[in-house]
Figure 1 (spheres, rainbow, N blue to C red):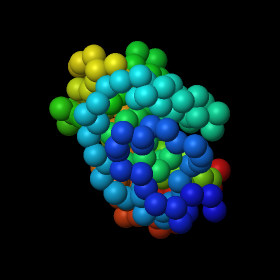
Figure 2 (cartoon, one colour):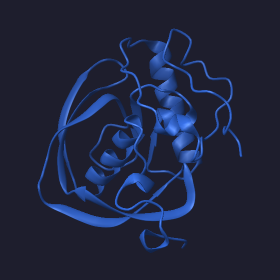
Figure 3 (cartoon, helix red, strand yellow):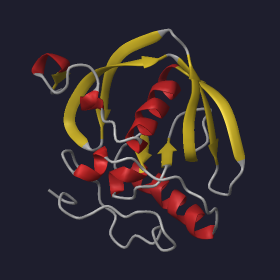
Figure 4 (cartoon, rainbow, N blue to C red):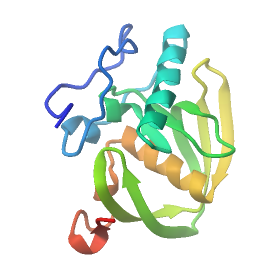
Length: 173
């Protein structure tokens, strides 16, 4: 399985210069580690963020978090209407009590789907790759995708929600 045994890259000056881009797959330990905040907003970070967007699209995803490619930095890319393409240091600052349980898939857990309960509406603070402050609300599908990707930054996967990977909570489409 590609990427299974190679170590994670902690953010540093050359962390954005990945030479080999490949997805990490569960149970790769990097997926369960907490990512570090990004402190430098420069051209290298912008290029990395652009490449993450392309990589996400090439793999048919609607979201991708840096740990999924072995980079333990708080960066996510999403492809949902009304949300900035790339978010740096995103955090959910509030969420609605109202939730919804729906099935989710993950590029790092291929061919498996899990029932996950998520808040229907969230408020997010983040920065763009250029350092611009972002503060917005997301609802429904956009909120679900953002919560999923931010979970990745905290080492939480969809198989960690509920009772885990038991058959009644996952299915193979």
